[in-house]
Amino acid sequence: MSGRADLIDLVASLKKAPVLCVGDVMLDHFRYGEVERISPEAPVPVLRLEGEDTMLGGAGNVARNLAALGADVGFVSVAGDDEDGERVRALLADQEIGDFVLVADAARRTSTKTRYLAGTQQVLRADSETIAPLAPDIRAKLLAAAGEALERCKVLVLSDYGKGVLEDGVAGELIARARAAGRPVVVDPKGTDFTRYREASVLTPNRRELGEAARLPTDGDDDIVEAARRLAKSCGVDAVLVTRGGDGMTLVEADAGFVHLPAEAREVFDVSGAGDTVAATLAAALAAGADVAPAAALANVAAGIVVGKVGTAAAYADDVIGALHHQDLSSAEAKIAARRPALDRVRSWRQQGQKIGFTNGCFDLLHPGHVSLLAKAKEACDRLVVGLNGDASVTRLKGADRPIQTEAARAAVLASLASVDMVVIFAEDTPMEIIEALRPDLMVKGADYAPDEVVGADYVESYGGRVMLVELEPGYSTSATIARMAK
Image (cartoon, rainbow, N blue to C red):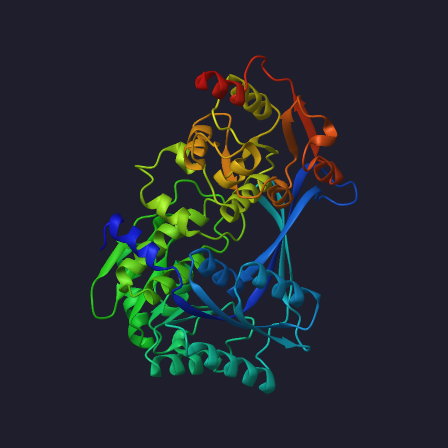
């Protein structure tokens, strides 16, 4: 098994690794709020809605995870010719999955799962979907699109959620085409008959799925190895990677031994979509040229990241690298996030019922005035996000001799403060794009600004957010400090 340093090198090699994903795409809706009373109409809780999110689910979440890791993603699926299908198209484009084919089927409803959450507790899930094999004309379009996309991809991953896209021999035909072209095939399976995935390279069932498919107990380590071996033999697959929740994973190779991978998660909020992350990471690593054992080890690390988030989450390459050397990574460095991971983190906080605060600035030379403002901002919210002007932005705003410190140094100093929960660097002259993406509940600036001078104030107040102006500690200024140093 590869060491952590080798796995870090492997993460770097995932960039632009070409992977094709085919399977059942869905929309995952999350509506969250607070339960404070029982309905007088029936003995059910009343959920007071406070926000909602929509993201790709099913095979779409596999594609999203591949994109988050930096892979070059091809994607083929079927959706209804409806509003939800158009939303799927928009989300695929938003995730920068440029090479996708979404076959429209007027006879189907786009699969949607709507989860209602009170804090982190799911109180209800409502599904809308069509479960049926593809009609002959739709089947032909899907296979033609997948066959064309397969020519430029190094690995095929099939994400089967049992909605019909891979039914009626479609999975077997795709596997045969891929193996004939020398392409490994990773399958996230569904159901109890895994023989339809015959000759795949790797199957990734969870413990329950393994037991049902192999018709054997899966209570302990030895049981899982025996069941996986029987499954590999009966299906003619090269390996079985069993996801075991809090017990980690077990990899069983047909022509080698087995290895138990301990769980990597330090905090578990939601296991939704963890299997998607495993399939995506495994496929990306194989496409980058890794053997199945290090690819499985990397998938185990990625799974440990997403179960610490709420909802169907993605593991970004930076997340994985941070997790791989988290013992050497200071807590301050862990607070610095790129924009997409930052949005995931804020979404998780918000779904836990936490109030998000935001402030921004150059913070070139951190002084007591800054520290006081940040402390007061933190007192008014649960999580404080600081938007930090990048170096080029500071130069445009402050002059050619600024910044004094690089953006990396300024971010590290800010992140070392207990009052700061996350730092996001932005390249634009104003933080408006970040504000629109984060939609903070509270926006904080110094009282030296007039309310109409605060960038984004009108936007924050438009959806019910609040703007707070904080009195500054007198006698402190970065520019004045620099001027005194110059003298």
